[in-house]
Image (cartoon, rainbow, N blue to C red; front, side, top):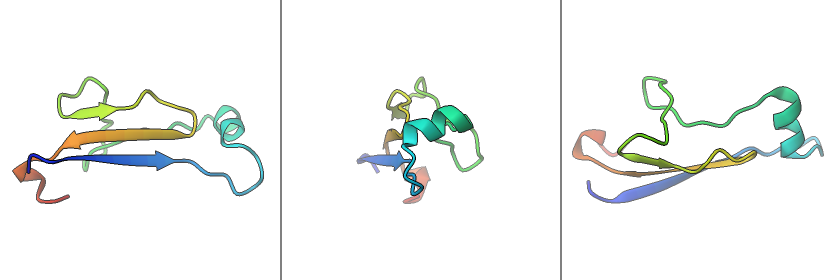
Length: 70
């Protein structure tokens, strides 16, 4: 508890098509959710989420005791 952790999610394409093309053509969005499946927002007090990029998004949070190391 009290430590911060940063997670990163990046979309890769193995078809030779760039990630940006996939996002534009398929309407793909990257976002973070909590265990209940609720979207985490930039305005959340515990979370700092990088501005949505096309192919990568990061989440930084400070861990609390009630997180139980999850």
